[in-house]
Amino acid sequence: MQRHIISVKSITYAIKGRDLLRKKGFRAYIERKINSDGNTGCGYVIIAEGNRQKIVNELMTFGININDINSIA
Image 1 (cartoon, one colour):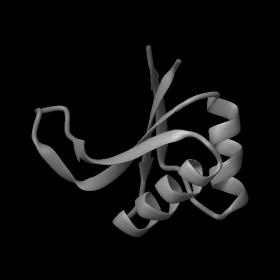
Image 2 (cartoon, helix red, strand yellow):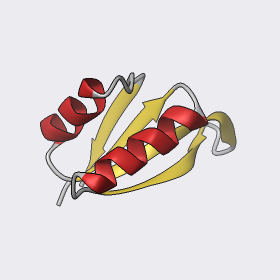
Image 3 (cartoon, helix red, strand yellow):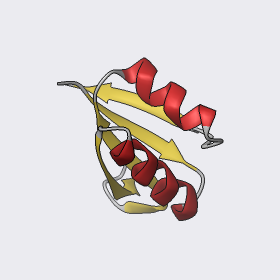
């Protein structure tokens, strides 16, 4: 199963997005964003498993703006 790191603009969007994805049957949780220097940043990411396009569609349908998304194996 492919995992996706979805950057959102606030903890509020991260919580809403996580909860929405869980209700839709995706595995999802929140973590602090990690900067390139290895330190935690001021943002949050949703980490979700599943079909990338379905995840993006669900979040955008409910007004969760995605700043960035990266997929990892």
